[in-house]
Image 1 (tube, rainbow, N blue to C red):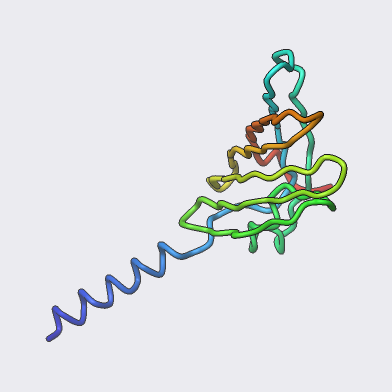
Image 2: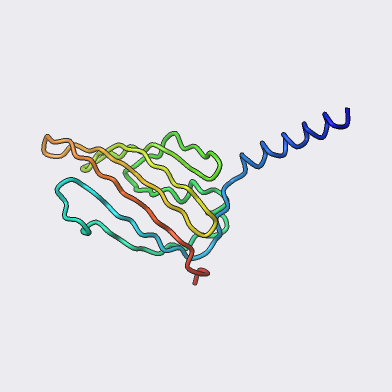
Amino acid sequence: MTVRTAILATLAAASGLAQAAPVMQPGMWEITTRMEMPGMPAGMGQHVTQICYRASDVQDVSRTVPKDKNCEVKDYKLSGNTASWRMECRGETAMSGSGTFTYAGNSYSGTTKFTMKQGGQTMNMTQTYSARRVGDCK
């Protein structure tokens, strides 16, 4: 009976670890975003920005998902250290897509893919994200 109890306790602890939130440290983060779109010159779509993530932000990593006032995040899921979601944007540049981020303590990386119609044509856009913690917030 003792061995069975130990095995059940180990399995319960392991399943609890698998559902734990990913480790992401608060602080100043540098995020490099690269955008690829058919017809766009290579290298034109890179952008680097810094964001201060507070402790409350990293406790709920859904707050790190790229957001826009015209977009709604749907079907957000967190599995281990990987988050996934769908996004629908309305307005002049209406589009829909999906994304994933994988967190690793002092870094994360991910991809978003969007489809939009413009001028009667369907256009696809892919953004890749590479982020790293660069220090404390100022």
